[in-house]
Length: 360
Image (tube, rainbow, N blue to C red; front, side):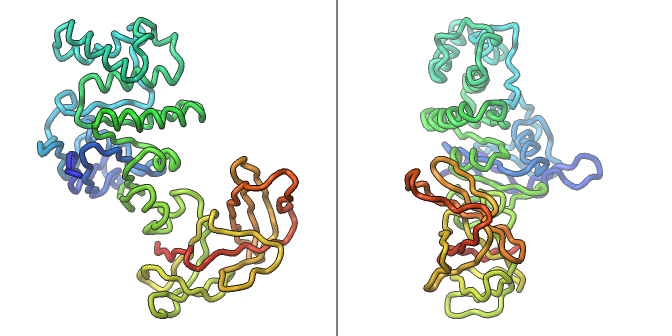
């Protein structure tokens, strides 16, 4: 993966407040689908706007294909931005909307008409070229916004929460379409999202942001299976967390004491400090009526919630210490098989190898 977009020690301050973006460095490769993920206010949209040229960094450098972008106006950068609101011109039809950017830069009419139609074919809207935006569905308007950004053939396509206004089913469909589109075009895509499932499903790599800084960068699998901190573990998917204290090392394992779990030996990179968090994903848990035997980690609790999700059943236990323990059980049974019932006492268990030891 060769570098295309380089963000070097970039910060952004608005007035005297704490930085909206604080010393962020990232390298984004060619043909990469990269996600900036984090909660509201973490700085991801501000960072995207600095890449686009709509905000100026207070410090640091941004280069695209080796060219320094500081001082380069937005309309001269090799990027295009798709806004959350789509920003389609209501008085123009679909074709005119897509042609507009080429018209502004003075492209001949025949060339812009040909490129606009080719791009509409790409997003499967060629047959709606003469429609007005008001005659389109939400998903169709989103594809018009994409086509208008793609027609100028940018080196980097920037997407600011482009699917947030769509309903859940259409959002899933458009996520798949975005991935296929990026693979066909070979452009680098950078998407801002607060939706963990969206980032995991479409991105090749993800930067998780918090308070203006990057907490961790990795592939979806790396972030889910090996989060570097408690924050990343909680933000990427569901996870069970237990406060613990490091007490010893035994061979390649660390030994921890946790109130609900007792003494547990976990083979994992050891974080600094004595106070840590033990973590395990819900899909690693088994739920049984009898106390499990063998070399497993186990905890008893009262069933508080049972949620049927079709492909899985989510069971929540509450331990005597008040800890909520979540299990996600595959739905591989039939209607005749009973599910745990609210108020019953059940045991949750998992293998020590499925646990992580996390720092702050």
